[in-house]
Amino acid sequence: MRETNFAANKKLMIRKKHFTPWAVVGIILLTAGISTVSAQNTSRKLSLDEAISATLTNNKTIRLAGMDELIASANYKQTEAIYLPQVGLSYTGMSTNNPLNAFGFKMQQKSITPTDFNPDLLNHPAGTPDFTTKLEVQQPLINMDMLYMRKGAEKQVEIYQYKKQRTKEYIVFEVQKAYLQLQLAYNAVTTLEEALATIKAVYKFTDDHYKQGLVQKSDVLNVQVQVSSVENSLAKANSNISNASDYLSLLMDAPKGTIYTTDVVAEAAINTTDTITSVSPTRSDFVAMKKAIEASDLMIQSNKMSYLPKLNAFGSYQLNDSRMLGFGAGAYLAGVRLSWDIFKGNTTKNKIATQTLERNKLSVQLEQQKEQSNTELDKTKRDIADIRFEIAQHTKAIEQASEALRILQNRYEQGLVNTTDVMMATTQLSQQKLALAQAVFSKNLTKAYLQFLTTSNN
Image (cartoon, rainbow, N blue to C red; front, side, top):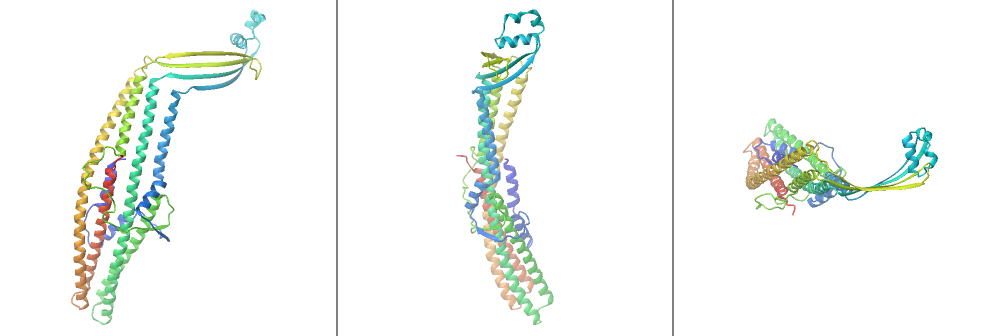
């Protein structure tokens, strides 16, 4: 899981830009939107903690990561074969007139008689049946290469445990992002409803004066256009509440069709510290890669151990009879085998060289990922400082825009300013409110991303 992908997504969401009036509305809607869906009917309140808890319990991506861990654990259990015996039972029926095999069958059945040494019978035997019941046992004793391979399989289990943990951390970040998007969508609706109410009041006042012959028809039309524009943006904002709710349902693996209401947006909604100077070396994805390097070392050691001799025991017990389902003559065979692969055409040597290069590649990738994460950490902390300043500026601008709108409305009612001035002031106030909501969203999202970057496995 590469941090650069998360960073790229974050940059698209929190990058600061300047927009013409009402253009910021479209950016808010695109940020909050997931996909266009039909309106929903049911509604319920959802806290961020509830969303995270439900996601950690039900999310399919997390469940898939858990399945990978179970698969690795099952593969590890397969390596118990280096300690446990292998036992096989077989039953075989045969018939032959081959002189050697026919005489051998009778010997295994312990049924040799003096007449069997007649040259004619030895050279031209009749069809001789043999029914064999055989129990075979193989017991590994010393296989050093398999021992290290088992340790490597154990490391694979640990790798997937840490990968699952990092997957959980990323999904939690996704839930935080989706929840903040839903809050932003509600904020956009509130702001647009306030703007619509203001513009409708201006429209009523303008229409009344037009009927009295005090203003021109163009003034009424201009206000109508503005009303339609805000109503259109408000409809999209309401749709995006459904979109964000559906995305939360997807993360929580809950049925779609529920509109979630959120807690009040708080500037410090995500708890984290701004004093962290570097990412933790014990972060789950770092530890997973470190375990992968250790697993590679063990596989290299396993191949080196394959140069050593192997010691294994074997044994069998066999019953032979000339009748089907007969168990007349019994015999056993037991022994110990010492085997040594002296030369395999440099296969093992070249395999060790390849694994060593792959192990070194993993080490470089780990260092690169740490450096990238630390660079992203520094940028994220600077982004938080910039957004704090932006929030302060927007807060001040809202106060100024509100006062300017109040003055212009009073002057408009007295006929001292035209309709365009009032609409521009209304647009300016709405734009600043939406920009403030976007800045608060960006700050909380950036702090959530900072938390994701600096999570420690401790």
